[in-house]
Amino acid sequence: MNKLIRYLLQGILFTVPVAITVYVILTITNWVGSAVDVLGISIHPIIDPLLGLIGGIIILIIIGAIGSSIFFYPLFKRIEHLIEKTPFLKIVYTSVKDLLSAFVGQKKKFNKPVIVKVSENPEMEKLGFITQNSLKDLGISGNKVAVYFPLSYSLSGDLFIVPAENVKMVHVQSADFMKFIISGGVTEIDDHAENN
Image (cartoon, helix red, strand yellow):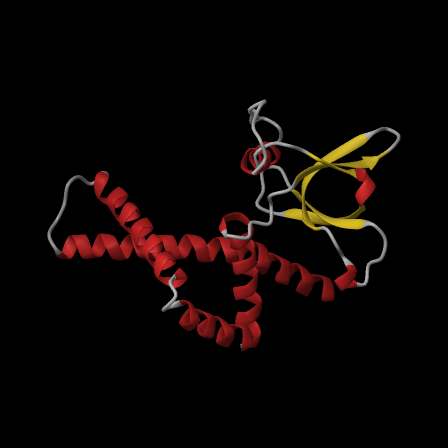
């Protein structure tokens, strides 16, 4: 029974961030599309939804700019603080926020692409991203780092604690590196791409 509950919670953590992001984008797109319909503006059945999507993206950009402004930032922080005090909302909200900020936030987490030796004989290596250079806060001693290994053809991955000497930095664009892993090695990486 505990295993089923654990799988349920993992399923929620994998699904909810993506579902919420898709839901927000679709809701804003539909809202913009409805507003355009009310105004009686119609260009073409194929172009109209694209205009709704573009309008939705513009609205998200405006919200991002307002949220970053000196006047509204304290208000957003206060709302965030209230959400983080609510038991279930805290889990969902922080998971979504951490996942999204890892990819698109100002403090991107997946910006240290590495290759990790996972086996000596036969010699095997795995591609991932360092997410933490120090694990002292977790009480893990020794020269170890946290490495996240994205799974191919998936939005999920695995986190491993590995000895730092088994980790070698890879000097390519983080986005290209992530695409290479997720595509199962099918995507080509520009030879002279430098890491961010």
